Image 1 (spheres, rainbow, N blue to C red):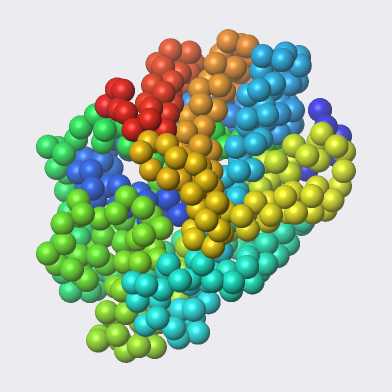
Image 2 (tube, helix red, strand yellow):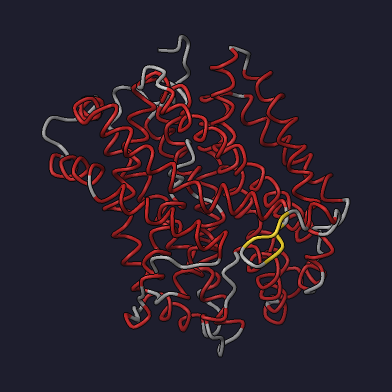
Length: 473
């Protein structure tokens, strides 16, 4: 056990921090659009089933490994496998993955902050111009915004677990919920908003296909930050008095609630803006919706509430998304930071400065891969298209590797660490007899069908992303 390991000061602090890692851009925008494109209420039902039957057992496995070892993914795999080289690859992948995802997330967070600043300073009409986004992501101003985002993220992380991550989560998460609820209340008062609510909530079972089911599983898995090493790392900061099963359920409930409520904001707003819209035509890209479509919707509100009012609503929205992005970014960076501190025994400040130097360098390169630099914009070619550095980072580390990391943790917990040790860790902080049926189910699921499902998702994702071939669905 690492000496002097920091821990969250309370169960609430852990829940808010873990939920903050899970609540991100995908929840606020990606989830509502995925639901709208894939059968509305039917998609919601499938999503909820996957959260309960697949994601919760994986979440408990990650938390248990982290709390038992008091280490990051690399240290946890090494300790429990007794430095077995076969598992060191999984440990390294568990640290490299969040580091590279942080590069992607840094770029998008900078965009969000830039749009927040522009909306707050009254430039909403410019943001609604369809040509603005392309010009914005290729402007030098981007790097000024990046310095601000790095400073905010660094200030939170330097504070440590209690004074940094936990304190920020206790402020940002309630603020995020409040902003979300205020925007939902406002949007539901708009003309034709109820059409969006009906489409979102009433299931259309005819749209459920194998691809939709796979999409619901991927959305649930990614939304809860599984496979990123975050929950192993945050688990290492948990008290032994804390109930892992109960905490997992609360984190999942919080994350899913935010995603569901976000749908009550996004879909009614879109239907109000265009009553005749066909949701199947919506872009799968959260980026496109946030930076291209929604500014147009906000600008259209000026007929009802004036330009200042429309700018205020837009500012609230981008502030909401910025809070979600920052909480996720902090959690993602903490994984490689914890690993670097453990491996090199350097201070938190030195570790963060080292990571920041490399991460900012890669983020600058990724930011330049949208047209500023031709070699970075057309870095490689696969699946019939040119891919930029940003595309490669997203495709490899965000879309592809996460289910592989989830597969590794399932196999490791049940076949290397063993079921008995896993269950012993879960009983710490557990009231006698509580969660009995669910824990028995989790043992069965982690050892049987969950690894199979994650392996299929991983193989199919590789085939689609890099070869343009659908193998299974």
